[in-house]
Length: 150
Length: 67
Image (cartoon, rainbow over all chains, first blue to last red; front, top):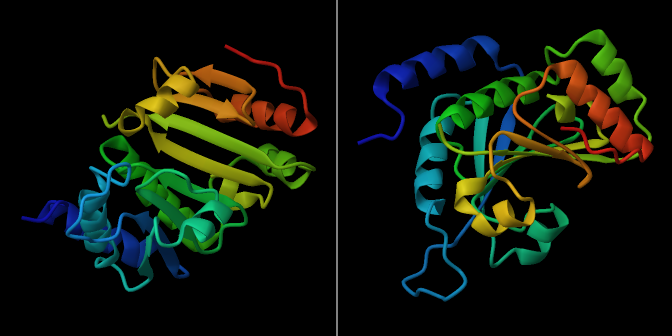
C-alpha cells in the first residue's frame, strides 16, 4: 500500500507539472541496508522516509532522489552539516541551504512540497522588504524550526 | 523560503519527536519553536516581518532573545 494516497498522488502530479520549473535533487541521508543491527546506528523512521521519498520523486521527472548512507559517508554528511538521520537536503535553484531533519510527516509534508516548488523556481513569495534584508545579510544565519507531526 | 533567497541562510525543519536529545538541548516544550543562530528564539508562529527582524538581528550579532 502506498504511503501517499492515490488522490494525493494525482494532486501532486498535477501540481508538479504546473509549478516545477527546474530540476530538484533530494539528497537523502539514511541508514544503509544491512542484515546486522549495530548499537547506536539505528534509525526507526529511515525506511518509511525512504519509501515516502521514492513515491514523491516518482510523481515528477523534475525530482531526483540521491540516497546516501550516513554511516559510510560520515565525512561528507558532516561537511553538509548533517548529524541526525533521516535528513533531506534540497538542491536546486536555492541560494542557501534547505534541510529537513526527521520524517516530513503531517503538516511538514506540505512544507516540503512548498519548498520543492520554491527550490525549483529559485523564488519565493517573500515580501520585497524581506528580500532586501536577506540581500543585505553580511554574516551566516542558521534558522532551526522545531516541529512535530500534526 | 529565506534559505531559497539568500546564500547566507541555512534553514532546518527538525521533526523533534524523533530526536528527544535535541528537544532537551534546545528546551523544546512547544512547537513550533524557532531558533536563529543559537540565540534568538521564539515559540509559536510569527509573521514574516517578525522572523525577518530576528534574522537581521542575528546576522548583526544582536543575540536578543524574544518571546
